Amino acid sequence: MIFSNIKKKKAFFFSLSHSQIRLQRQDDLHNVLKAYAHYNPAVGYCQGMGRLVGMMLMRMPAEDTFWLLVATIEEYMVGYFTPTLSQVRIDSMVFEQLLADHDPKLAQHLVIIDQFQF
Image 1 (cartoon, rainbow, N blue to C red):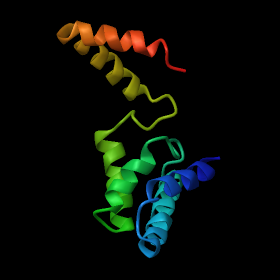
Image 2: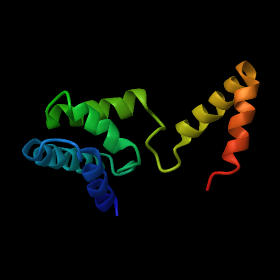
Image 3: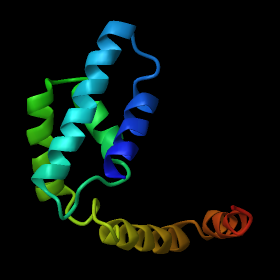
């Protein structure tokens, strides 16, 4: 299942690139995500990794991207790419509280429109 999700993400992310470069970058994206899933099976692949890796691949080769991904997840985004998304949930609650404190009208508007989302 992880690898089918990775394949879907790579097709979406590189849909606007030139064909030859796109094919190589799609392979790089797939390979980096697959390598990370093997490197850290406790995390595997999580939603959002494809976009992060895609942005990195725009600036550096695949091997450098892999190691930057490792460092980013292990040092700067601890808890973001986990099955429970624990840090994302914590940061969302902090943001909601800050928004309510600093712009209550906007915070209330977002609560109202969120009730109508499916």
